[in-house]
Length: 321
Length: 251
Ligand SMILES: Cc1cc2nc3c(=O)[nH]c(=O)nc-3n(C[C@H](O)[C@H](O)[C@H](O)COP(=O)(O)OP(=O)(O)OC[C@H]3O[C@@H](n4cnc5c(N)ncnc54)[C@H](O)[C@@H]3O)c2cc1C
Image (tube, rainbow over all chains, first blue to last red):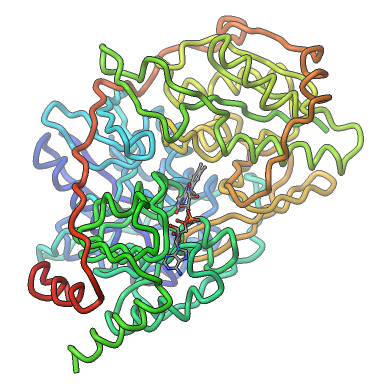
């Protein structure tokens, strides 16, 4: 019997949906191999996050609320998460493969003597974990041979779990982050301001590449507005300063799988495809018909994006009245 | 100051990959390159060394003679002072053992900063820097897009979800490099010539006094995921809208 501890992801006091995708993995795991799951909420003034998780069938929602956990400093979070896992006898710790999960989980694994598998997309019947490797060109099935296991979950590979009702108890955990001894200080956070849906949560994404140049937003924004979509970008568009790093999709950025993905003025490099090729419907708009993006697109339009996208925006707007 | 920096070779991202017969790694005639993130780490180490006189830079790679070539050509030829190769079979070690090998080298070398790529573009695990930092009990600053070292501190800007975070870490520390950290320089011809004469140590894992050399994670099978098929080319925006509406039911 396993006891799975799920680290909740939250932002400014609000639960992030990727936590529920991660929960879907945990439910699959305990359905297959037996056991139960609890949530861990780390942070400061985050009782609301714990409250929001009570209806999801967890044995308990552990709340480690401490001023020194206000920012996800990896060494402090890993210590508290591992302390909590030990105190409740959890043999598996999982978190979404966000930048926080990637930062915190390996340190947690060391503290638990656990092997860690990153970016899990599926579970096999024999207990192996499937994960994309080589930018998703190969899938590796990996076994973790230690009794304790740590897993980061690729949220886009699991549908968000539904609430089951019930009221899991919220249990305060006396966290001892020992931040002072970890010799690291938070200085500042320069956040991207946006009223759009999160890339990880959007059902439609309008993504632009380097071809849009300094008209990146002029082209993508109106279309995203009519569709209620999130905006994404290639690495080249970010490198050239047309879009912030938070929008980068790909092997080294975010991995998404929306219902509809517009790939505009981008070539379709393997590293970009690694982050979006599991989207349900892909539309490519590019002026060069030979670009690899057309090999993965369901619908391709060979056209100048500066002309075609405004036209597309107008037609969809007209349709929607 | 002393900086230890990673030099890992990876298969070329555009290479056609063949899965080895035992299904545990790739095989055959693939082109290799230096892991792009290690290139950023190396460039960062060189820039810190240039700004701080008396800094020694040491590149470490884990693998066979082929890896040695990448340490020389990718790191020493660019200006890193020394190289260390730890012999191991790449296909049979996991992130945890790699981190413990690094830890063994850190105990011998006593660097002030260990700089690694944030991930290797073959295994894509993004773990080694963080594992190493915990094994050493050091602070970490991962996914760095800006690094400033002054005195015994590093101010590091990190690319994280939602924006950019800045941390101040005390040395010794572990930093992992993201791609926007810098533009890696090319090796000059003189650099390539010099690299041949730079000190180069070859170590066995046994030299590092690890508690054990067990792995915690094993690849049991590699496979090729089913790809997407190309769809249709539409003739204009009108046809695209019509198809998205009535065929894909996506808008
Ligand atoms: C280690 C590593 C990791 C990487 N990780 C990522 C990653 O996570 N995400 C990522 O995206 N990339 C990543 N890359 C970069 C990747 O290899 C490509 O360089 C990048 O994706 C290219 O971006 P792009 O398609 O916008 O630019 P380009 O390849 O320059 O393509 C521009 C496209 O715009 C088209 N175009 C130009 N003008 C117009 C117009 N007016 N109308 C229509 N079309 C037009 C051109 O035909 C061309 O196809 C990584 C690279 C490395 C080495």
